[in-house]
Each structure stands twice: as structure tokens, then as C-alpha cells.
Length: 382
Image (tube, rainbow, N blue to C red; front, side, top):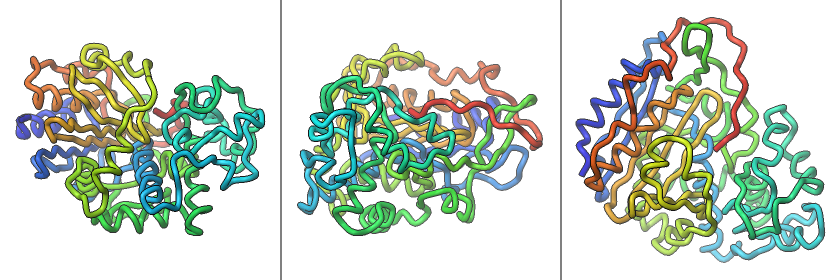
């Protein structure tokens, strides 16, 4: 079992010494909450503390909500994983008729659409409407036939929103609220920039400025694709979500549903590189349905990360040990990302390594007083 107190102290040190404006973290095990806490402030040089009810932007952690929503409709019998996208969206098209006919619901949610990586994300960031980007898929470059290879997507993934509307007659976001948020008691949760900014307490995103972290207004672009990146929520609500994904709310999410969406489907070798903990601990990496599945030092880790301008997020759990964690923070520092592997190492009894590297403060800019700032160039979503 990880030492929740030690992780609590480390999280506070990250905020204090690595100058992360605000962060929230939760650790759960065996259906119980070991730690759920906010750190720092909602804005650099501000005075409002991050609490368990402070709302953060989830970015790509939203994808698991989309997969779960689809699985609920499959469970109802109103949708099937093998259903062809074009059967419900007749105007949809890929570059050739065969590919158009082959693409299934499962393909789009398991990142096997066959498109090249992050197709049309730059156009989305340039404020091209989602509907026009869907139309452009008819001329998009393909990496393989649908279902044959992995390439991470946001645009094609978000077609599930249109499919939910086509099968239920209701908006995707309303269905998630009705079928997931409300049954799990996730009343801090919402979709869209208005949802974030109308929250009683919400974390401001921060980008690097000349002297440190500078708060900015959340960008709208990725909110236009709710299934891929639209959720806002608090660490309180994410704790409920994590417990449900770990099987502790069978009244809402059945064991069969969870086994289905957590089942690995396609290899993702790109995940084995990057940060030191990935290179050291990961032996294999696959994508399931809205989730990543890692072989973490010989143990299954269900995981996903998220990144949009000014926010970073991580969620992961070890089914074998029935332990999981969530970390949310409101800047682009890489330092807090080391908390997840440190929690998992302790849960598995592995030799302790300092994946946080808290003394490498040079990698995280010190906080600066708010000032006008031109946003830095955005990175591809994970």
C-alpha cells in the first residue's frame, strides 16, 4: 500500500518548490479513499485555494467518458460495437467507399480509424468548426484500412457524439450527465468553457511567460469536441469516477461493461518512450476503448493522460491491487506527472525512484505576477 501521507507531503512540495500554481490529487484502494486533497491556488499569485470541489479541465481524460457512454448504449441494445458509422451518419465519408463502409463504432473509440495521427487537430485549433472537419475526412490521408492500425485522433473519435444523438435523439452531453454524472454524484462536472467558468471554484490555466506562469482564459477549440476533450470536473468527482471504473459502482457500471472497455485492442509502441518512468517501467502499451492499457513492470495499469493549453491531467489504476490515483494541475509543468508512477511503484513494492525529480525546478517556471501575455504555441493533444 502506498504511503498516502508521503504522497500528500510530496504533492505539497511540488506546489511550493516547483512553483505549480494549483493541483489536486486523489488515491483510492479497495473502494476507500486514502487521500483526496487540493494544493496551491486557483491562480498564480491569487488567494483562492484549490479545494476538493475546485474544477479543472480534463482534456483527453474525457475520452473514457465517451467510451463508457457508448458502452451503456451497447448494454441497452441501442448501439453495437460493430455497427458501421455510416449506417447512422449517412453523410459521413472517408477517402474511398470501402473504408467508409468498414469503419465501426469500436474503431473510432479504440483509435483505429485508419487516419494519420491527430488528423485535422491543427485545423480545430485554428477554429475550423467540427462539422467542416468531419466533412474534410472524405479527403484525409489514410495510414491503413479502418481497424488495422493505431493512430491517436480527436476529430474522428468525437463522431461518437453524433452517433449518440442519432441513436437516442438527445445531445451527447445530456446523455453523459444523465447516465454517468448524476448516478455517480458528480455534481461539480460539466461540459464546455461556460461550464468551467460558471463553476463556483475553478482552476485558471497557466502558460509560460517571461517571468513564470501566467494565467490565461481557457481556449475554446477542444471544447468543440466534447467526447474527446470536453469534460470539466473536480477531484471529488474524479474520485467517484475512478472508483466506478475500478468496479466499485456496479449499480451504474457493470463488471461486463468495464471488462469490455478496458480490454486492450491495438499496440501503441509510441507510449514506451518519453519520460523516464515510461522507459523504465513500461514493457508493453495498448489502446483499449477510451483507455490505455500498460504493462507496468509486469502488472496491468489502466491509464490515460490529458493535455490542453494550461492544464495537465492523469488517471490510472492497478486492477490486481485495486488501487488507483488521479492528478490534476493547472499549468504545463511536467513535474507533477511523476506522482503517478511513484504511487504505483509503492503499491507494487518496487524499488523507490524519484520520478518527480522535485529539485529540477529549472524545468518548471516560477510563478509570476499576472500580466498580459500572448499565448504560446499549443501542443498536440495526448
